[in-house]
Amino acid sequence: MPAEYVVLGDPVGHSRSPAIHNAAFASLGIDARYQARRVDGSGMALAAEEMRRGDLAGANITMPHKDLAFRLVDRVMGEAQVAGSVNTWVMDEGVLVGHSTDIPGIRQAWARRRLGPGPVLVLGSGGAAAAALVALADHDLYLSARRPAAARRLVDSLDSAAVTIPWTTGMEAAVVVNCTPLGMRGESLPDPVLDLATGLFEMAYGWDPTPAEKMFREHGKPVADGIDLLVAQAALSFELWLDLPAPVAVMEQAARNSSRPL
Image 1 (cartoon, rainbow, N blue to C red):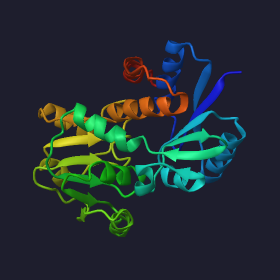
Image 2 (cartoon, rainbow, N blue to C red):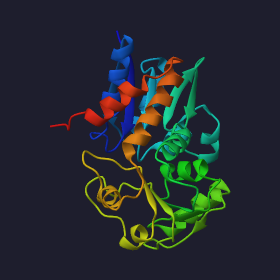
Image 3 (cartoon, rainbow, N blue to C red):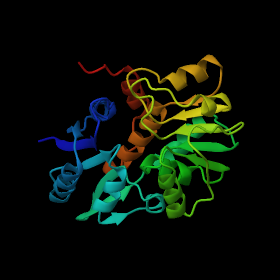
């Protein structure tokens, strides 16, 4: 029987993670299968038990369950403890361990796309925003969310130096990091936020570029897209599960070329 891996989330039908990991397994001759699973909170708890029983060899977690994934594990590693957010589950000698490949993945994608050293405006107040605040802590940070109280709670929980500002407020010469789902279905980010920005890190992704991505590319501004981050995350997860170097080129090709589901 092939080893079973999953990505857990809601929505999850758009996920390219199965294409990425199944291509990686095939390229290295690994007998394993990776599937997407749409789950609610109770489904997350069941998946955690499947990990502990050995029915699942590994799991990734996407929106909106990264905070819950943190609470369901037995041990949290490294900067995931600071972020309060987990996106990868690994079993280690009978213990369910949570990691954040978001945090190093953000740094890798940021450097690859040369988004620069300037101020950063993070949009959102969930697990992805927490990872961004931790990953980019050496920048001048600003945080904006549609729920201002949630933004303030996030900053306090991280003991972050980020300054909270009202939703729809732009920040002069900042790189915008979109940690919300806005854009996945063609929604636009607030114009004042985009008009003042010098670059974009678009964590959301669908089967078409988001409106913000299109605008920034048309104006020749640097963009790291959701696929840049997804491939970096996937490679790091692969290496945590299998203790093997990830075939990154194969994984990126699969991510960029995967087909839209029917």
